[in-house]
Length: 467
Figure 1 (cartoon, helix red, strand yellow):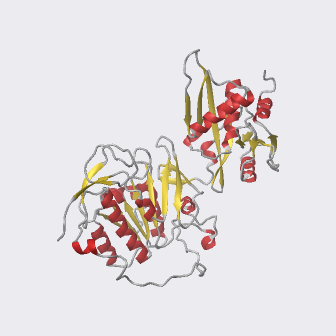
Figure 2 (tube, rainbow, N blue to C red):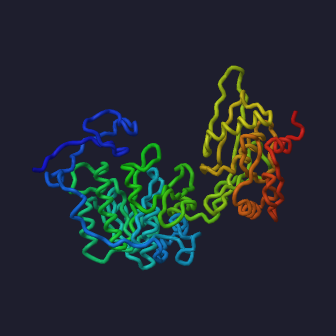
Figure 3 (cartoon, rainbow, N blue to C red):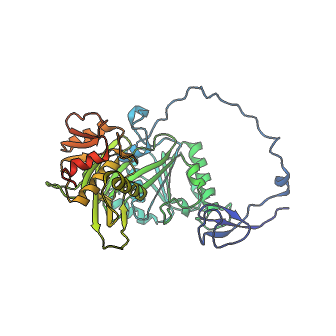
């Protein structure tokens, strides 16, 4: 006979326990454990052996020929770039959605996820594709008002405000499958096969599984919007990210106009491309030249400011590294504040500057910022950060027409960075005439390069009368 029970599930990591506790033993999160109805287990299911009675299926060979997936453009070039296919040459070099694929997009509240997807849905509908947009967070009239502000009032998008997965799938099954289905958001969906409120681990898992099954069997491209936690991670069970084909994060500060769409998982493309947008009066606008967002317009050099050509996938993006060094009274503990870069790497770089170059930062507070709110993870930023710190400490500005890039070793040696030619080409295109680089970097053609073997040589170049 069926036996009902209660289990306690962590809403952060999905761990299951037999009793309630204040802190999850697996992820150490507090007040995330909720009671849920346990799955019904019958006596037959408990005794059934999986070793027999199954269906025999045919195995395929890894060497079999397979065609590249044909992609469906969303009408937004930066979104297509983030989805993949642009650099790989698939479908004629055009990126976009793969039919039957599932995309999960997450981001902070108000960052523009719904705006981006509504713009993509409207443009695909204008191109003649069937598009369905299901919102579980807003009424249909609210979505229509946003579409009117975005200039999409006449787009032929099938719109619904619904949270029942059974009703959604029944409605979609009554006609031909759409080319694109948007679910906003997966945390609001509810499956009546399970008990529990929407947003719980079991509900998110079950709802996503049914929607993904529909996408795979019908060939419909499915986009799921996901909530994020206060730490910026996608809320709900981690298995949700394993179930989908592509995971995108929509990054940016609401105080800044720019937004970055960054893939962290992509079964049909790479994860080294980004899409850059600017929030305007009529929604999100594509930024074809991202460097213009992160550079400060000036005609003269400023102390502590260095331009760094970062690589975001195959695209070079010039940004400004800003440093401020402030002397503190004797006995006070100096602060180290970093925005947009790794604080641990800053500590390492300060140690190298002190041990290998004789520059003392022990009695100085150090503040480092990447202008525009961009987050830089490129290790080639070491040289630009070091130049900014040297400039701020010695009050000697770096020439405003120069860029700097290269990796710094713990020995103080400088190592060349990848894709140096693309970095130099982008810098020359934007009017920079010189570059501070490791000595092993090849010459940059239109831009004059000054090479250094060690970090100490860079200090001697920037501060010729040091000591």
